[in-house]
Length: 161
Image (cartoon, rainbow, N blue to C red; front, side, top):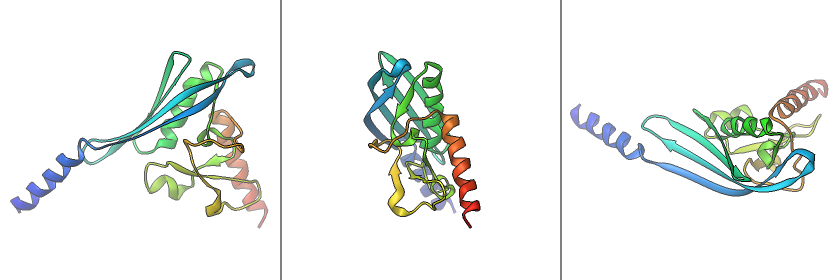
């Protein structure tokens, strides 16, 4: 039994310093339509049996941060709330009104992927996007606007049956 305990302890030790990082340029839409370019840094840090997700956004000599016990989407939303207090919204897939992770995407890992949804239509594999990427289909929104659209989308699926 001691050998198993030692092996398990070694596994925990090896994982305790694991870190995954992602860095991207990101657009930020500020008051009066001013558009800035910032940097988004996403980092997953494992500290034994669990991991924490951190998102940091740097722009215009400012830094905002968000974190979550389990997923990047939630950490991104928390960072976006700080931006919103400044009157700014992020311009990336994870901040687009019509992008939201499914329950399965949230439960299977750090939620870097999400679906771009259309009212009345089920999301398909072709609709999966990386929340930190950006494209011309983005519709920058606040966290609340995004959640409201997601609820409307869910309702539209029930109505279309």
